[in-house]
Length: 265
Image 1 (spheres, rainbow, N blue to C red):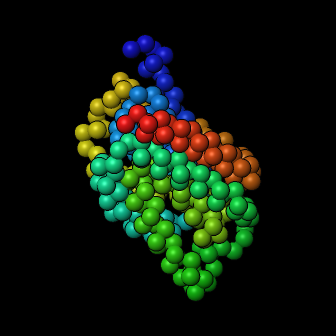
Image 2 (cartoon, rainbow, N blue to C red):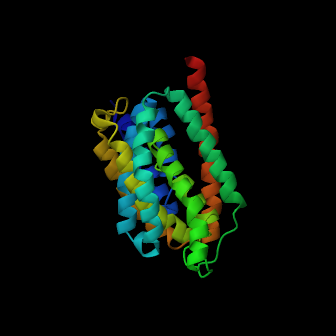
C-alpha cells in the first residue's frame, strides 16, 4: 500500500470529525459513503463509522460543546435511542449494502429540506426546552417517538443520528442551532456505542483501507477539536446554511454510489 493510499482513509476520518465538531452532527452520513469509496464494504463502513462518530462526538463535548448542551433532553433521547440503535444494527446486518446506502441518501436529502425550511432561532428565545411544564410535555411526547426512530436509524445505517437529531431539535423543540448541535452530541455517542455492540469483530479488520479503525477514530478526534473551535466563531445562520449544503451534496453523492452498487447486484 502506498503512503497516499494509506492517507486517504485518515483524511476521510479527519473530515468526519471536522463535520461533527463544526455542526454537532452529520459526520456519520459523511463517513459511510466516504469509507465505501475508499474500499470498505458497506457493512464494514457502518461499523467503522459508528466508532469514528462516537469518538469525535465525545471529544467535541469535552472540547467545549457541553456548555450549550441541554442534558435533560439529551438523556431522554439517549435512553430511548440506545436500545433502538441495537435493534437497528441487528436488522441492518441482513440488508444488502446498496440498499443501506440508498437509505442514507434518502434521509440526508429529507434532513436537508427540513433544515432549510427551519428559520434560525435566536439564542435567547424561549423554547420548548425552557418553557412551562405543559409546553414541555406537548413537545416531548412526539420527541419520544423521534428518539426511537433516530436510534433505530443510527444502528441500521451507521450514521450517528445527529444529522436527523439536529433538525428534530430545531423543529420539534424549537431550540437554537448551537444548543441543538451540542445536545445532539451525547445522544450520538450513546447511540453509536449501542450500535457498535452488534458489530463485533468488524471493528478490528476494516477491509479495504489497511488502516486500523482506532487510527481513524484518532484522526476524527483531531478534526473534531479543531473544527469545534472554528464553529464557536461562526454565526448560527452561516452554520445552518452550510449544514444544508453538506447534507444535500452527500445525499446526492451517496445515491449515485448506492444506485451503482444496486445495478451491479
